Amino acid sequence: MGNFDGVHNGHRQVIEPIIPHALPALQVPAAPLMSESALLTVAGYSAVPPHLPPLPDLEPARGSEAVATVVTFFPHPREFFSGQRQPLLSPIAEKALVLKQAGIQQLVLLPFNPVLAQLSPEAFVEQVLVHRLQPQRISVGVDFRFGHRREGTAADLAAIAAHHDIPVTIVPLRYDRGERVSSSRIRHALSQGDLATAQRLLGRPYCLTGRVVKGEQVGRTIGFPTANLKLPSDKFVPCQGVYSVQVHGVSDLPQPGVLNIGTRPTVNGRQQTIEVHLLNWSGNLYGQTLTLSLSHFLRPEQKFDSLDQLKQQIQADCEAAQALPL
Picture 1 (cartoon, rainbow, N blue to C red):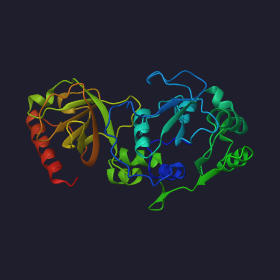
Picture 2: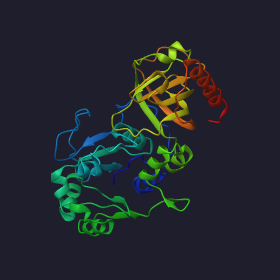
Picture 3: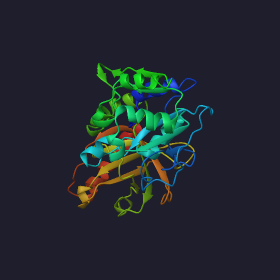
Picture 4: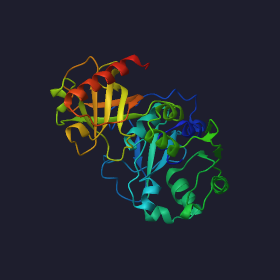
C-alpha cells in the first residue's frame, strides 16, 4: 500500500512480501497505454477518474483465494492538497503494467477526495481496509502515512490491524550511494538529464509511451522524418534535449532512435513536442503506440542559424547514438 509512483527499487521492497515467489526483473513496459490485461479496480467513494474506462467496484469475499494487490491513491495526495497538477513518473496505465510484470495481480485505486482525506487512521483501517478490501496481510514502507493530516504511521497501522488479526510488514527504506531511493530523486535526475542515476534507482530505463500523431513534418523536409508522440497529460517529461533511445512497438525487436524533447527553436516552434527519428527504418507509424526507452542524454536543445546547420547536427546526433552502447 502506498503511492508507488515510478515503481522503483524502493517500492519493489514493499511489494516483495506479498509476492509468493521471487520478483522477476523489471522490464520496459512496452505495451499500449491501457492494457486490457492490466487488472485495475476502483474501490471507493467517488466516480471513476474520467480518463479511465468503467471498472467494477471491489467486493472481495472473506476466505477467497488471496490476490497479490497494490492499493494506491488517485489523484496523488500531493495534487489533491496543493491543487496543482502532479506530473507522474508512472501514470495509472503504465503503473498497472509495470506492477503486473512484477507479479501483482490487482491494482486498487482509492479515489483521494475530501471524504477519504478526513478519515481518522482508525476509520481508514476499519472502513477501507478491513471492511472493503479485507486483506490477509499488509506490507508498507516505514515512512507510510495515512489518515487525517497524515496522523497515522506505519506502526499505528500495524497496531490497529493487529486488532483484526491482520499482520503488517513494515519495510525499511532503501538507499543508493548513501541517499534514499525516492520518486523525487528520480525526477531530479531526469530534470538534469542524468539517465544513469534514474535507471539505477528505477531498476529499468525511464520510458515515454504515447500515440503517434501528425506533426508539422519539418523533419521530413530535411531528410530526418520523425514520429510525433502524444503522451498522457500527467506524464513526467525529462529535461529538454536530444536523447538516444530504443523504440518498442515498431517491430518484434526494439529499434534504435534519436529523440528530441523541446520547442524546436530553429523553426520557431512554440509548443514542446516529443519527436523520435528511427535509425535505418522507414514506414507509416500514425496511430500506433510506441514506447521509448531512454538510453543516453546526448545534448541540450539549441537553436541553429539555418536548417542546413540543424541537418548537420541531427546527422551527428544519429552517428553518436549509433556509437553508444545500448
